[in-house]
Image: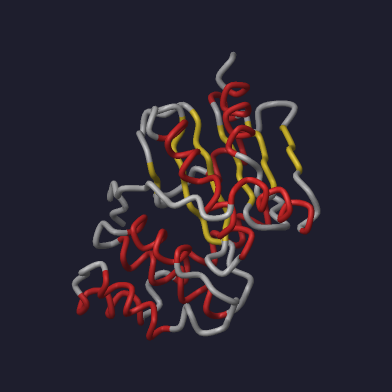
Length: 225
């Protein structure tokens, strides 16, 4: 599956860090967990396959995000922090960002995941990913309906015959199911949850919508030797 698009990932920081802090309290606060020893087994599972990846393949740290396109907390983190993370860590080659679905809000979450993967097969995964978060509304309120997702694909100028064929079938069901099972196995209990995998399989877990500075600290810790 091709996910090599390199879109302009500059985003409007619409809500600010203050909202992020409020959201963190509402969703149980920030939690930072670190594995005390290399967790090569979990690391290899988290990095398995060919998930959508943004950044250099040579980056020493991989940031694996488990999220749901209908999750308001994920949308808040996307709008306030992701652009900073991409600028400071991904664009500089220090880390790469991987997306894995953890769909639990309802059937529209699964539809959104399928649509993003269908766009990814035309090299537009991250562009579609951005559109989903930029257009997020009330979960299961119709914003991620099949009809609207097709409109997003048209907006990106995708080959609609190819998109509809991929989107409407069960092509991505095993991948979506596997990602969810992997999240459960890894201990995901909220979205977004991030696993930072460094050299030698060391892992730092960041649960909840933490500020970008926390990711910088974790990457520095993983690469300090």
